[in-house]
Image 1 (cartoon, rainbow over the protein chains, first blue to last red):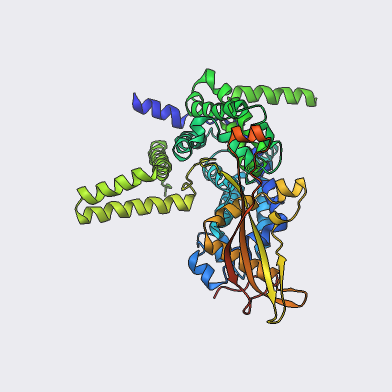
Image 2 (image 1 turned 120 degrees about the horizontal axis):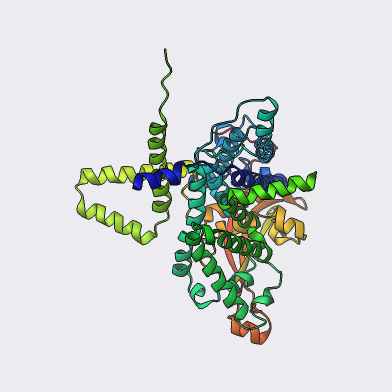
Length: 301
Length: 212
């Protein structure tokens, strides 16, 4: 009985279309972060950049992690070359050309960026790394990709249906983010229980800086109460509701709305919150996306 | 000779082990600190020294694995909220021994930026400042970087980089509503660090120097 459930849950056929949408969305986001990093790339990751690794006192206090391609190619490959590699890999990943190779390249590069200096690590870096790790095993390039188009053009036989387990790992890990972070919220700050957390978030210029902070207090505590308890409700319900057919899409849409709201009101975590939204594609039922693709094709004709 | 190829069943077993390892890693890494301490105390109290070493080695390997594959994230989104707004004022002190001048150093968060720069180009700056808030080595690294980028000012060489912490308390929501403003007007200043960076700084030359 247990073996059958395990087998069906992890080794059923993968839903290829949701994974393709996920790939395109994630690829575009990573591409954006590379483009936005362009003016600061050397400042962030060069040996003599912000991390100042050539200063003995600094490198003793915060040694560089050798699990990084920057570490092994220092003085041989200019650090800007890795930006070009990242940009090309992200473009190719989005288009679905040599998808597996690009996924592994982006994962290695993302790890290298994190390991170069922990001071520069952002929520979006950690999110991208987690998504890319599971993506290394997932069939991301089987649909809506140049790889698939080239296979058809060369009249190569269809690839065997891959197992669903990498998609399940993505689904579980995204759900676990909420399941893990919600208890920490209550443990770390009483404002989550009292309904004031969103007020403090919006009033802080670390995350917000300037757009309508008066929204959080002008009309009394109600905005903050609704936003705080709404966030708790969505984050608390998501890891459970997302596993049942009827409640899955409402849970995904509510969480998507929450993250788009965060992107609007807390713009300093834009890429992190959009990376969460990218992760939600892996929950979409294949049939829903098939009909969307069919509709788009009809419009195209 | 026929190539050896694992059967589907073998693959499924291997993948199942991999799945369990990854799930256990994520959950273990994200256990609260208190649970980690309890586990550690239980290991010390209940196991013989040799067993303790064995278990601790396995835990160490688990963390190494988590670090290698990037599953060592502790997911704590917006857990603790700050009750005050703060920013650094980072400036350089330039002196030739007779004349001294202070100059605000070019950190993106201490100069006016447009919306595009603030949201997209500076997307790492806020977290970077937060990360060096509790990290003196990080502040020192950044001080050296700023000194290398701005070695002189009006003919005077840089001597030191000063970090001032400016902070303003955020009012309680009820007080903010009644007064119509969420920030207390009093601006508090505190000198955090003075890093002496003057002596023979290696300069940026576009190419990183080889590792010593």
